[in-house]
Length: 134
Image 1 (tube, rainbow, N blue to C red):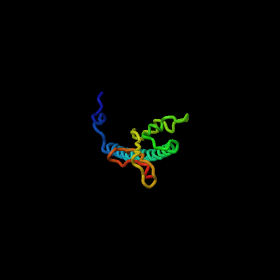
Image 2 (image 1 turned 135 degrees about the vertical axis):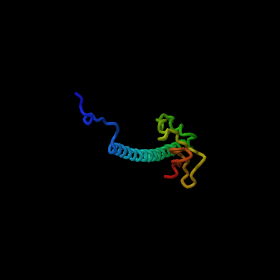
Image 3 (image 1 turned 45 degrees about the vertical axis):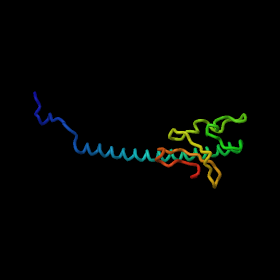
């Protein structure tokens, strides 16, 4: 026995309401994703600022002990005088995976501190994160 064609009706496509609900969900998720990436970039910049400040303290301590600034930040990872090293190698890498830079030739005329900086998120495009700005 065959059913009438009205009872065997097949669904061929999505309804307009289903499509609108899916689009609304995608828009909400995209908005959340953009906000998360903004806060992630801001957090990386704050971490870099704190790390630059820690590097500055380690460099100033090195100068007090040795009477000169280190030629490179790698010198801070070497033990001196039977004591532990001031920093580990991981402390010399910024949140974007690049090495921090020290420029012993560039001394702040006001404070007398050497320049220590990270190149920032996009070198050449984003501003560097420096110890002189703080």
